[in-house]
Image (cartoon, rainbow, N blue to C red; front, side, top):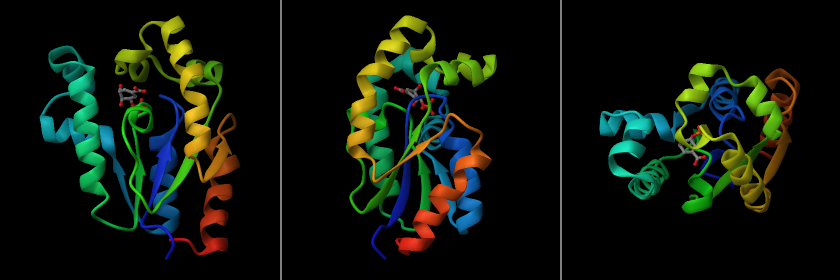
Length: 168
Ligand code: S3P
């Protein structure tokens, strides 16, 4: 086994959680979502954590959470869009970049999902964040998938990569 876990990275709303759930089902792995684990542990939503404790505190929670998750193997882990920007990803993980264009994300995201994300509230600031982060996502990725299409059109790219290379 080359990698302990699969870690999905990419901008907010690119579909990491949806992809992760399907991928985990295909590969018979556990799915974990860092934001959901943090919300459960803190008993508060991401918006509440940002509002009450600030972004820096949230980033520290992210690092602690991913470090703890990395103690286990055989998981598909969806990260928040800022995690690989501010924090370090676990070693021995297959990093998959879910790469969707900013406009595709905005058009695809339902209002309810949009509202949950404090850093998406100002569109021009979110666009700047997107532009600032793209290179880092690319540099970190072992595998990048074009996520501008529906999940069904690209999920096999990830599954085939993993099964062909027998990496997990
Ligand atoms: C963030 C992305 C969010 C969440 C938080 C901050 C970011 O996760 O962690 O709102 O900095 O990009 P998603 O990528 O799942 O939306």
